Amino acid sequence: MKALPQAGDALPPLEIAVTRTLIVAGAVASRDYQDVHHDAEAAREKGSPDVFMNILTTNGLVGRYVTDHFGPRSVLRALTIRLGAPNHPGDTMTLTGTVVEVAEGPDGTATARVRIAGVNGLGHHVTGTATVEVPR
Image (cartoon, rainbow, N blue to C red):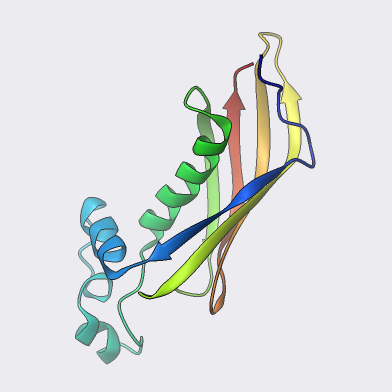
């Protein structure tokens, strides 16, 4: 039987290579056709050194990070994130997380609130919290 999460538990870091393909594929998959997510020249014309990741891709990567850690039966109930430094091709984003609160339910599940941070070469790309239901 897997132990329920405890406040203070750290999730292992996850390094994600930020590739041009990841950025473009994430934008297309989320139907975000803003040129700054797939056209380097347009991104430069708008003041960015290159294309950059959209918030929906970041949101998906953070959700994956949490549910991969807690297992396939976990359910992501809420995710609140804030973007900071952009993710550009060639960088690496490292996600980390810490369980900050756990509420045990009468059915043997736990609801955990996890503080998330994603850092790249420019600084904090994403910060936020996830609420995940974890079965015993």
